Image (cartoon, rainbow, N blue to C red):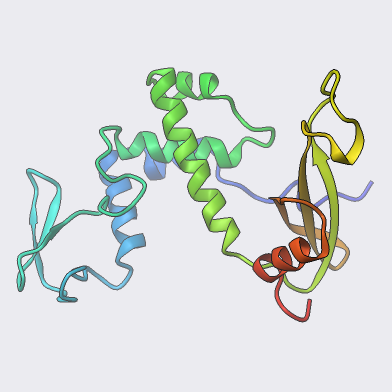
Length: 205
């Protein structure tokens, strides 16, 4: 049987992850690079010279004296959870093929279940927002379906109040699945699907 290259694509091992992001300082360095790939830029005036306030882990612009940090305006803003814990949570969510529960994550992270639940849902919300702005293009297959079980005494079939309509779109490349989108919709009327396609599908696909 031919090996499925999507299934066996190379990932980041736990040992490599710990080596790269196991320390708080490493995580802050990575976040700095992601936020300011060409060096610090003041969010207020655009100046690129600054001094670091190490007691508060903040950077102060030398020109307008605006203070900011690598966490400001991000999912990590005002968090009391160390960045190393956040990074590990993101690793677990993205690397576990069949998903991971909040309870299991809390054991790996060493924090409470409630804190893990909030952290996990914040990460997943940001992931959803990022995916929603990406449009599929090229060869795409689209289908509709419903999500939900049987509601005793309720209406059956497509009109059931217990079923949520959604659209699934699959982008293929050389006959292989590459990207997929699941979108909840209000129904399968032409107007609704046209609106969905304008948001999620590139014109000419």
